[in-house]
Length: 224
Image (cartoon, rainbow, N blue to C red; front, side, top):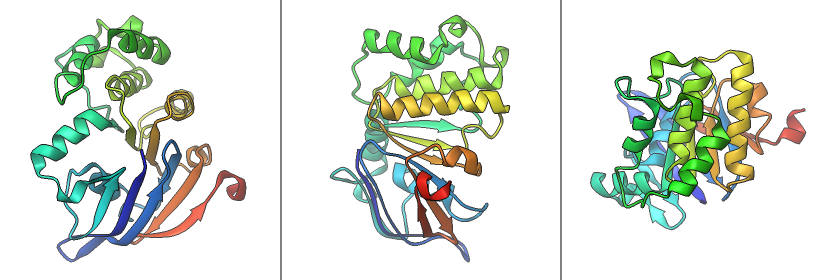
């Protein structure tokens, strides 16, 4: 999925989170968005997903203008095209992992594909944990389950917010491997917000936000 933001501007009170932010994320590319706390990274993800409306500017996902959609239509578009991976996993604590995956498939127009479901469960390695509750799993196992949930509906775009922030280093390496698999083998566009420059260097492209503006573009070649 091709993602474009044009003059994207968003303020909260007197604080301007995004300031005429224009970016292009190529179809099938893995991009890391870095920057200090308060630089606008998470706000950018919310704007791309249509979770919040900008004060000014547009968000285009392929040919869909997210800023013009009603809340209901934006929710349906997200359900059919966008997967999310969060720092705190976003799993329902009172449901076992299998139930969490089933809940994800009950929204939008997606028709359940059991063959795809089995493939993704095997690729992410969570089959031994399907009958476990989230609190019975390690942080890395929970994040693998969250990535499975993001993939189960065959998204065109995955938005990732600090996916390794609560994980040990080895678990973080494994999560990055899975995210890179999403992009390289499944052709999914991945946009990841992170404070970890080492993780960012593993992606195709790095975008730095400073005070809500895309200040710096780097590739892994120029960052080394």
